[in-house]
Image (cartoon, rainbow, N blue to C red; front, side, top):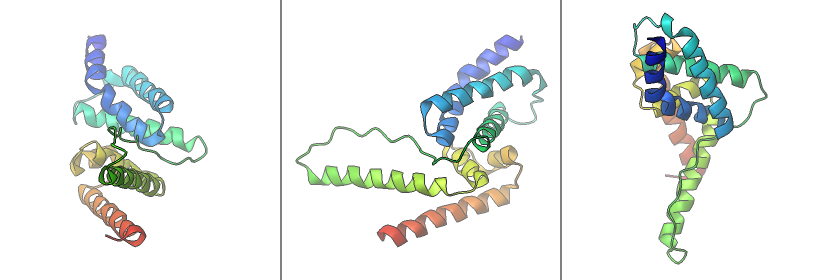
Length: 169
């Protein structure tokens, strides 16, 4: 029974957990190692899951703890979010070239901004980017729902303000 439940949890959630880990580490190797650590912990403790929250909330809490612990145990590095794959661009079309440069500039700016956030705020952003609502993020982080919504609002405003100071509107 344990193996069946574990297999279902693994199959349904591995990609989500991996994506979250990738946001913390910025490279596939470390993200895979962290995701593997998460599912080892899931295997060891799945029989202790009480069902008081969604299984995904429980998994994200484990993943967040694994990633933060791993980051604490090594020297700080810059957080990177996977670069979006760009479609081939017609070299002769300056509008397409400018769009690509602007997109890359935004990704670079966002990565830099995230790298300067506290680990707690970075966790909130990473979970928010996984389309989790403030209530689920609250359950994972132990902060109140109001606190989560306030932090998300402040982070968004901080990103907007810094972008405008650096690049205009």
